[in-house]
Length: 226
Image (cartoon, rainbow, N blue to C red; front, side, top):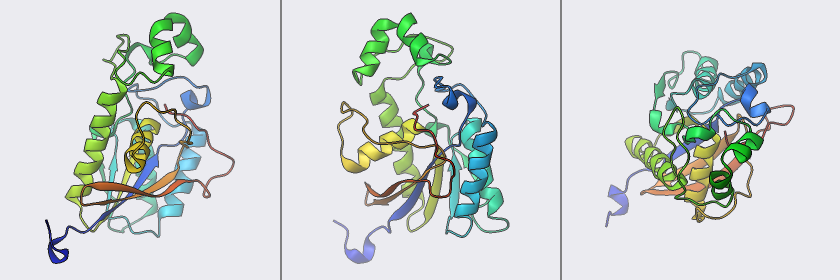
């Protein structure tokens, strides 16, 4: 066991969801499909960047999907010449891949894939998704990918503050990990566009500090996992 003198310094994590997209607004499932921010999302990203401009951020890491990258770039631009203006890209922070569900409205998914939709809604964490342009992931596979990526980046930056810009499903996984929630339990917490969600990773344990900060945004933002 490490002594206090040899203990690894905790890492502060700002986990941020991308701004709004047109598909968020109409509740069309995005997953790995690469959808850009809409005008409202760009506005949200600019406000988010302004709100975080004076905060310490040592590293910014983004999912490789453009809705996250655009949001991360807005945070970096607002920091000017400060440290923490370069955005590193991490594909492991992508949203869950939903296979054949992607690109469809929830009503269309229910009509085309009734059995798979029912399993998804019942939170079958090992449920197989229908094939599509991309191979679907079970929720358990997705959770392991995301929490592993968060832990890896935290371990690489002890004592630092990192901003991870990602997606609604990524935020859900972090929330469940920090609170020790079963993957099978319903999601009874909001996951908001352009929200700031604060965690600390200390000796491999993720702890939630604050959730769903959106005071920098007006009007209210969407609660959606895509």
